[in-house]
Amino acid sequence: MSAALVLLGHGSRNPVATEQFHELVAQLQARRNEPVYAAFMELAEPSLGAAVAAAVDRGATEITVQPCFLFDGNHIRRDVPAMLAGLVAGNAAVTFRFGRPLGADRRVVDILAEHAEEAACLD
Image (cartoon, rainbow, N blue to C red; front, top):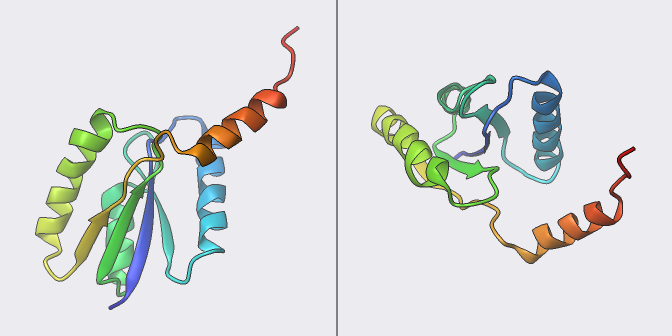
C-alpha cells in the first residue's frame, strides 16, 4: 500500500499566506517518509481534489487528509466531509483517512505563549 498525506488549509487570496503554507508542507515533508501534498479548500490552488488526483496519479492507495485548522468548526464538521465523500466515491481503490483539527492541544498553547512573549509593540 502506497501512502500519501494531504495537508489541507483554508486558502487565502494573499500570496504570502499561500507561500507560508507551502513552506509548512515542505517542513512536514522533511519529517515524513510518504509524499506530502498541499491543498486548499478555497481561494488558492491546488484544491483538495487536485491534490488527491496528484497523489493517486503517483500511485497512492491510502490518503490521509490532515486539516490545518485550529478548531472543529463548520468546515471540519460539514464542508470537508462533503468534499471527501465525492473523492471517496470517485476513487474506490483508495482508502481515505481524515485527521482531526489542532484543537486545544498543550503544544498549541506553548506556541501561543511563546508568540505572545515575542509580540511587538504597536506604535
